[in-house]
Length: 93
Image (cartoon, rainbow, N blue to C red; front, side):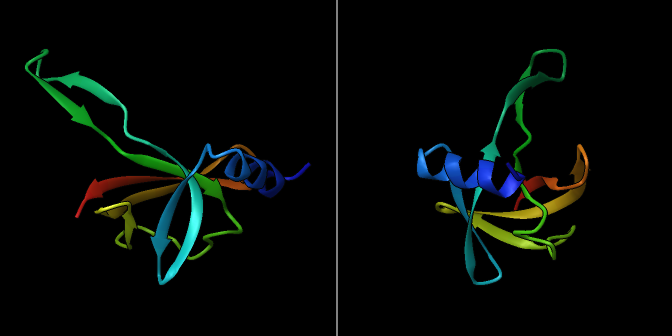
């Protein structure tokens, strides 16, 4: 089973979120974890997404994307595991 097969199965099960990038829509694993910062005075949400590298090979820092009704800018893209999967760290645009 390839990483693409795993993501396709997750998409069919409704576990992924659609993202619009460069005029096309791709299903990704979107995460927006909340964590306390500033000694507990505030919450920080560092959104990120994971996806098969072959689905968005051109995605790089600075690119804009849309998830639902929000726009994000890619801060960093890094390989996960053997490189067949990528993680993009995002910031609100």
